[in-house]
Length: 409
Image (cartoon, rainbow, N blue to C red):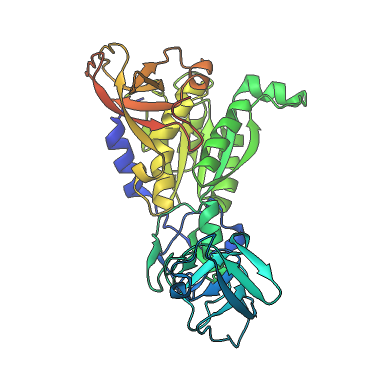
């Protein structure tokens, strides 16, 4: 292995790929969690006309001047208006019109008095207080104005966005297509266990990577477990690269006698562009680009695999959805809880960020490359540069391990 600095590796990867963000139309009702590929502007006012905020009576506010419980005002009810009523009655002096919520204001009226605030006597209402002008009235365009930019490209659709888009009449929107990842686990021990047809299968770490990809807006298929056989791995890569945007292998990528993935890549005629990162954990990771598509080698140990995933695959996912990396995952600034001594390599530092006495504090979770519990107990991470000592109390930027990471916990 020839170790490559993290930022150099990422630059080489993004320069070498021939993947362009793809755009597709999706139904608004199925757009939750998708990334917008275009700005969206309101095509109409919301509300589209002055309307009633609550069920009540449309009146002229000046007709209620001086009204009290001991000196109420009596107004004649002309009829009822629904949201789809076409011909609206004119409200003149001494008159009122019953409106359901959302119904348009009739000409002449400038306020709504709620039904629970009046007494109904035959075809009249008794009003016991003064009603202010525009009380309980939603004005045209008060919520959203026609032409107003409401959502920007790169925005991840939330449930409230779905509701607003539907209210505006949008049935479809343009989003970035999900990047398609294939995931293979490679290794003799896993392969032999897979022959026993265990349930669940032994390649559980592949499903961690699949989950990370899908949380970040991609799609992923776990395509099984391969033996330490150069020919089998080569043929599997050839088949997957035609169908998927990115192929990930997990395991068998170091320099041991059974680490066959780098050799299988060489058999494709494109030796690994990068094999080995100045990253701890995550050192054996690397990649090549074949037919314009990346093949990412992740280590078999789970913390190493996750560290290398964030370094190499997060930029790919950001690129495929037209977003800068810092827009893909939330981040916070927090004070480090303890000193962190310098390493010669970049360090994947996982932490638990919590609020302590009104400040965000990041407590490191140390452990070996295969100690999954350090990830379980963490909610954020950072990549510390080489030869960098960080002192207790120093404030650093920490990125969430996933969109579902909550802070504080």
